[in-house]
Length: 266
Image (tube, rainbow, N blue to C red; front, side, top):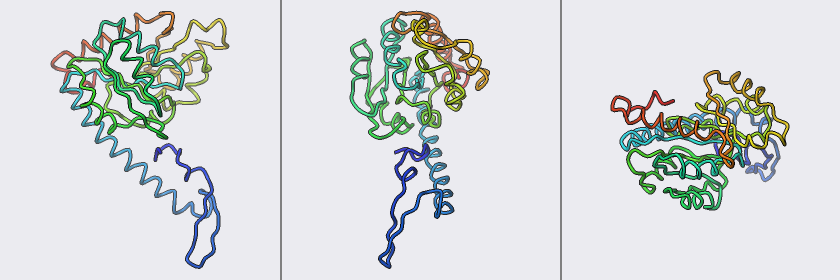
């Protein structure tokens, strides 16, 4: 369970403490023992994120050594990440490999392999996101070819993945018109963490209540530097812009002066 996002049962539910005198009492967090639990939680969050950041730095070194362009693809469930990756594998002309994150099953990794790319599945169980140590362990098993595009398809979640640096060059956020145009204001941390915003399923615009201009304005209110592409991963609209963005950043990474850090790719 995630120590920083509050998804553990102990953070949400009342529980019973037993005492040596044989009696017990119930209380909820935030009440009788708030002074005990809140500082401990803050320390735990800090320790977890610091440990993750150290692993992320190691990942950055591994990506640089292999000349990998590493992207952290994030979205809510069902936004279309895997469909987009299938087309990217088949059509972009780039060597692509994928680390798939889901709570259960290997269905998405199977789809990526069927599209023609190397893929490795990570199942997080009750976990709501991938972390840097998971990627560190997965990389040797995946064995991406030098110079590849490595896409890390994170667990569908607009909260927790914003907190965890995986060592990636950029977070790419995929939203869909079926989700509503107020998502940037409701989930600002994720939109603020992203370098590129892809608005998917634009083929559905005639059938849903979604204001593209309002969505774009909200996204740029949260993150003024955020680039936005509109696309349909099923119909093919806008995919050439996405492929061009990938090729440009892959080209930057191949330049010797930038291969080590990748800082200009964000």
